[in-house]
Length: 133
Image (cartoon, rainbow, N blue to C red; front, side, top):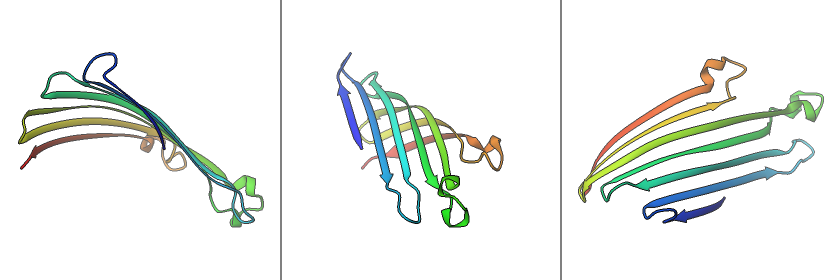
């Protein structure tokens, strides 16, 4: 994975992260090429010493074989799926022993196109309270 991070620009407490990754397998006698690409960006900001907020997005694309042994042509066996995620969250640490975090994520993709398109959009909410010893 390739990652490029920027910290402290444009203000103290700002963190920006860019990431990208490519994964590939070459074609063989029984399989087509399989590729995956991922990229994303995240921005976080410390509002105060106790409060941090963040947001970001990522994209993933997968090119892969279904099962080329069941089809007459390797080219017919190729599939492509993708997923795009957006997220926002925040954390509040009033002291060194207590932390509260909330995060909301929306993911939209193509994985369930053959079943039901309504399954392609998913929402996740996470709320966490931590005691730190």
